[in-house]
Structure formats: C-alpha cells, structure tokens
Image 1: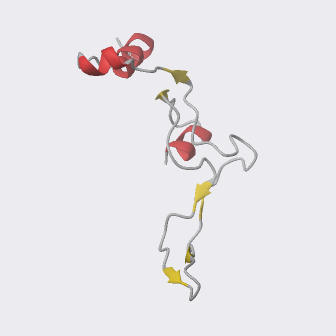
Image 2 (image 1 turned 90 degrees about the horizontal axis):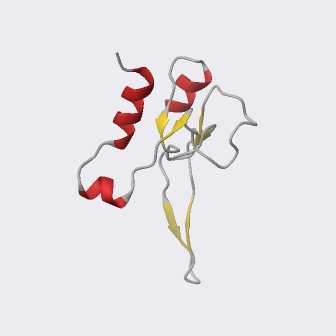
Length: 92
C-alpha cells in the first residue's frame, strides 16, 4: 500500500524503508512438500503485483521521501523521531 500511495503521489513517506517488495510479493499460500530424500520445498501459489514502476527500487521496499532513523537511545527513551521529523516538515 505504501508503494502504491507514494507512486501515485497520494502520500509522502517519512521514516525508513518499508518491508516487502515495492513491485509486489508472493506472500500468499505456500504449501510445503517433503521429498523422499530429505529435501523440503515450499511452493508459492500466489503473486501480488503493485501497479507501480517495475524498474523502481528493485529488491527493496518503498524508500521514504524523508529519511528518519531512530537511534537505540531514541527507542529506549521512547522518543518518536519519525513523528518529530514529520511534524517539523508538515506540522502547523
């Protein structure tokens, strides 16, 4: 969803790269088959394709328009760095 919103200029992303693939993924059903000689295989049955540029961000998720990375100190002190950056950029 983040990739589609960003690609269609309906959202600016703030923070870190999203998980998953920008163009889509195969996170649907993946049955497992155990072969006689001990090998185990999973076979993806579904493929999700996002309506975005297929050549943008290959091998990555959606890259934020504004990068904001919390440090370990920020996390330990419960500081929401991403929200602070967003408010700084877009707040009233």
